[in-house]
Length: 281
Image (cartoon, rainbow, N blue to C red; front, side, top):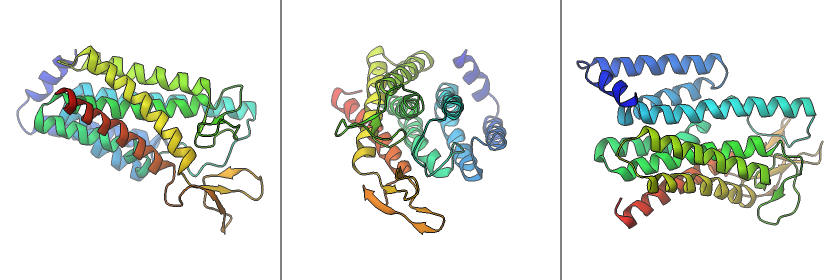
């Protein structure tokens, strides 16, 4: 079915394939903005990434990226609803569930680069990079959103000591299982939707997606900036509150959650490239 759609689209006379792709991405970006899944900057970033991925990898890559976006938004809304009803106490996050351009870049930049590499080289390793980047972004999102629903408090991945719910670097068994499941799901779809890839490469995609989520937790616990909220006594991702600068209690000030997400996503994609070069993929 995917190959059929690709053949129908790209067999059209130029410039109709590009016109259709741009038109479809405009509608997608507008819909995401109106649904408040993306702000204006995030919608613009998603438009550029969507056009690049669909043009480079066809419907297989676009559907994989769409699977990440839709599933992440759905699980985020469900998790927030359950936490709100359960009145779970959490730390103060810097950003809400409406993604801005930095969040879009953190989760989609490496996938876009990999897609363009595939367009230029037609090497399977570029597709492995693409799959690993999408798998990592999905695994990390699921780990955070589902992990917060755990009946047990999270522990720091570095010290194994309990930490407040929602703190970067805090992990739960439920969250780790969710991350692994999400990564495996993306890897399975990657294998099914892309032609010419191998099961071994699919296993690599799933493994690196999960590994990237683990790296994200280590970075979150070790270098991400966290501040002390004097009103609640809880750590916060926000550097100021009501016009007051908050005290930095750990991490590096310029490394926020978006930077951690980008770094872990780069890890998965670059590691996939390295593995591919090592085995001649």
